[in-house]
Length: 361
Image 1 (cartoon, rainbow, N blue to C red):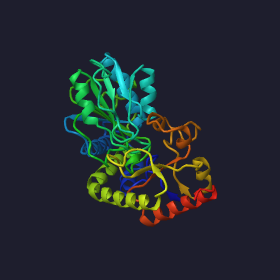
Image 2: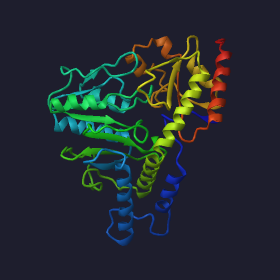
Image 3: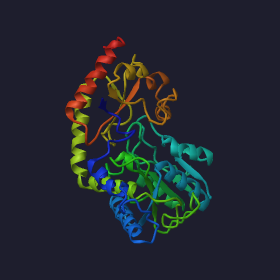
Image 4: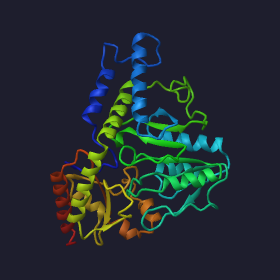
């Protein structure tokens, strides 16, 4: 299998796996509960704090990292509790991930438009709530476009509102601006383990907990903290920081290769500003769903992994004004650190051959 679906998830880094192993082991002290006050518990708690610092190193200064079960929990926490703390209203981009968009809909938010290139229109003060919360993702998960988060943060702050940034697809890949008040993260998008994410909260921003119980996570999130998952997330973050430039250069090489190999396919979304590990393209006459079946040895998607099996047309492409026919002829390809040029070339060749089976040359 050639894996070209890095926006859905990424392979676990060997370094992250190694960091996790001690905290999965028994019958030694590696399995201890970090809330326990005995020696083994204190060691586990120390490992969690090391990981917290590693994750925070890629984020703006002046905030705290709270570990969660993933970005979905972090986004729900930020939006629902943020709307309670700042009740002046809610707004968010039309191309947000479903984990944000469904919260926005529940909160009767103003939905902010994007243009045909998948880029947010300049902030409209009339749509920004006064004393509320605004959601603006950093890198779109379906088309890879990089949104002007700093502009939306400035517009939100001008009206005494908070800015929430879904940085899941950008964290460790592109620079995160200083403007957000809340930032949601996920470990498995940066070669860390599934089942853990984080919410970064700027100092001075006060949210009520989303989950009640033992308040284990700095008094703000209940549930036993997993030292293994935290260690894996921390190791993945540290590796992303160390390899930031090398990973970016590798992704650019693969982007150039893919664009050269698929000249007949039209790009969905702007080429820049864009994270170039995401290639969303369409071709007239292609049945993308059938293409996935015919090129079954290549892992790619029709859009968000959360919605690929629903049969629905991508809400991101709809928001960009892409027709239903073109949306159903679109595929998303994603690559990263562990994708070789040979793998990408072979995967794209298989897709091109499967396209010809549909009579599209």
